[in-house]
Length: 412
Ligand SMILES: Cc1cc2nc3c(=O)[nH]c(=O)nc-3n(C[C@H](O)[C@H](O)[C@H](O)COP(=O)(O)OP(=O)(O)OC[C@H]3O[C@@H](n4cnc5c(N)ncnc54)[C@H](O)[C@@H]3O)c2cc1C
Image (cartoon, rainbow, N blue to C red; front, side, top):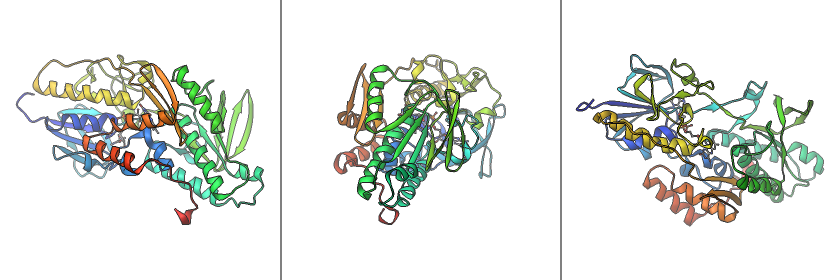
């Protein structure tokens, strides 16, 4: 390929795709196709829900991040023909040809076939999901008069989060703190009810014991009810049916948020290539598809053997892989030998409500308000582009990161 200006097409503008595009900018005729107009720093979607961070901090527009060395097409890719080396994009008149393709479309919410889940639960993967959850919380609070008896208030303000992985824990503690603050401001009686429902036997199963202790303490301080070994079996608009120890029960809910898992992106499901049992794309140690030398896959769609197992399905992995993908794309272009890399855990950080977090760094876990500050600092350094990092860092430092209360609709 040496000498030509290869067409590099990257599908998906998340951690894997955007960071690859930034890395290979200028190395060829680079195009990023993605279905949103902004990148999303998902680890801080909880802070966006609580108003601790603003939209521009965690969801900068691609146009602000990319310069003229990367062409941007906003649209959903609907088809990929790997033999003809061409992709089709929704609402885009022409098919797009490529020489090198990068697949980085991430996953989608897995409702695990639970009846009513897709229809009634709120997913939590995008800005729009956080917006609709916040709206639902405000609307529910707005309907509760201060003189309502505590037991009725509690019933009206019951929110359930499905899944007690990091997402479910971060979300439920954030929601509990926000709701409790709203209770005080609105002088409501009693307290809100936030539940986490988990079919496994423990919370944050992917994390180590040291950080789990902080998580468990925070859940109890935030008064989040944790129901493990409990399976959600059905949802309706305002009820959730669960099963525990063979017994079923129904709960009235103001909202159910689904953080119960990720499944393979339908675009990847369409492709006849080598995959794992779970449908992940098998890549060789250089991130290339064994059957297609010009195609790379990374992030949540790919199965990469040489990575610490706890890294599977994380932004940390996608981000590190983008560096390798970029390096190898340049190697393909220049006809050099491709590289491999072992990916390590960079540390863990979970936000726990609006005032604290827990961080595991260098094998040591610590928690509380200091960990919250450390998490903000750590994440500033992982945002895309120096320019954006500096702007956001300055904003967090000078303007602060206090949550935005759930005020009544007319006062927002
Ligand atoms: C709420 C939340 C919190 C998280 N917190 C953490 C955390 O604290 N730490 C951590 O390490 N990981 C975290 N993760 C996981 C992390 O976000 C993912 O592992 C990571 O984003 C994977 O990167 P990716 O590039 O594979 O996919 P993504 O970042 O999901 O990017 C995929 C991109 O492809 C686009 N796309 C999808 N389909 C198409 C299509 N057909 N055509 C065009 N574009 C398409 C999407 O819009 C998106 O921009 C979190 C995830 C969520 C949802």
